[in-house]
Image 1: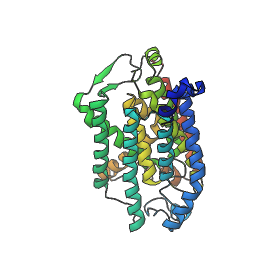
Image 2 (image 1 turned 45 degrees about the horizontal axis):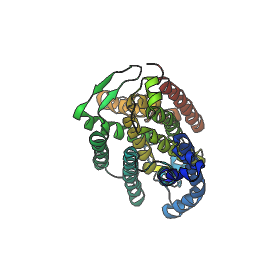
Image 3 (image 1 turned 45 degrees about the vertical axis):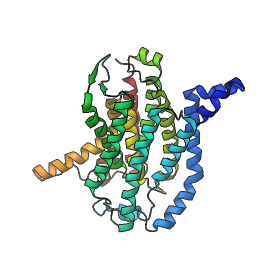
Image 4 (image 1 turned 135 degrees about the horizontal axis):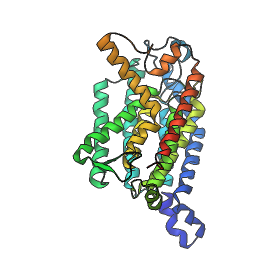
Length: 359
């Protein structure tokens, strides 16, 4: 919005020329998101504590220590994340850009589904929340709408592979199945990871930081041609959105770090994952997302492996799934699990960035 309002006035005040630069506006979005988090966080936490009283219902089939260590901690802190993403994005991004509105659609859509799920958990005192089938159907609706917009108005439909130069697979109408799969899979993968204090928000912040770089070079014709990656006109504006995600995640981590004052809940986890999935689709870096967000992939695969193994062979591969609970039951302290997962996430982010050059 600032770009649309102030940049046309450059002829009167030359310093307003700064607003044409995506890098400047991305930094502005990061700092604005961080400031909003710090200003609104304490008030939101106090409000959630007063309204929720007993805090997030703890699953009885999880690690037993959670029943007394995390009981009473308020949830739905993801509302802070959403606020700190949406406001800076609208403030610093070009609001005439189609891709900005698509990512906001999926972010807020999945955030609303998560809010509904969290509210049911609290009202009914049931840690399972909304029925899984109902939740997935709504996610399909939001993701399919976003995919249809990108297909019909954004010209999306090709799948690019890292390490391969000038090779793309035209998916045609199969894109309307593939794109929702990426968005829904990403949203639920982040949600599965959100089981320890700061465990999900750290890798989400690292992944968003990586995509600040990816969106910028994908939307810059010279960089894209030099790196032999697909150029997507207008996608550079998503660097502002990803910057807002970084600032919002960093600000939320201030309150979510061990021991957490607030949990993000489904409202935050689903929204973050869906946002990352949508950005990856627009920039044609869906496979790179699977690399950079490898922690989320590992967490999801651990659940799939556990369920399949138990149903087929009646044996558990892990002591408990998702895999972070396995390490808990092995006796690893919670902060050690969290920091080691962050370290792995940083390594995966570097590998993901390396794919931009190795073609």
